[in-house]
Image (cartoon, rainbow, N blue to C red):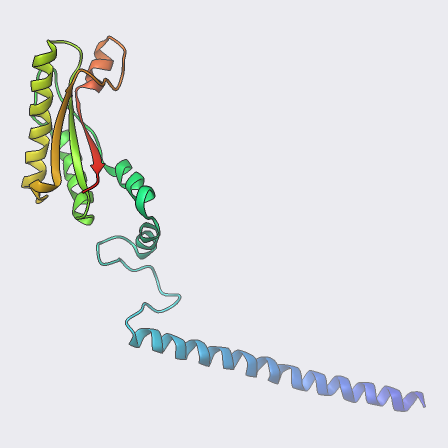
Length: 193
């Protein structure tokens, strides 16, 4: 009796060992065919192939970053773009652009080019030295200089407005050279249409 049970067990084990690789092979082969068909359908529709390397989006951003930005809407997108706009600084009693300011404005123009629906306000600021009237006029010249430079870089002038705060809104309230250097600036703010 024990020989019969043992024989069936060996036979059953043999069948399992024989069938298992076939089932596994068939299952894997089936998945690859489906995956390959899906990939061909995606390519025919113009979609990137799954598992392919990240490709650049239509505006120069990697596809992953583009998807992230497309998922941002409203205030979240404005906040992200606001962080990308760089302030520029000026020398004492000057409204001419430095090389560093031109570099920052070029980066700002690049950001604005990617988002043609975004308008900005350039705020001109001064340090506390000088009269209030003089600083308001100097702040306006600073903002207008940045505006003109952005226009030369291809940004439509109708998207850019300016305002001068003179010495009214210091970035650093201290009364020393370091604070004054920080306060002599143009600040860029995204505004709605």
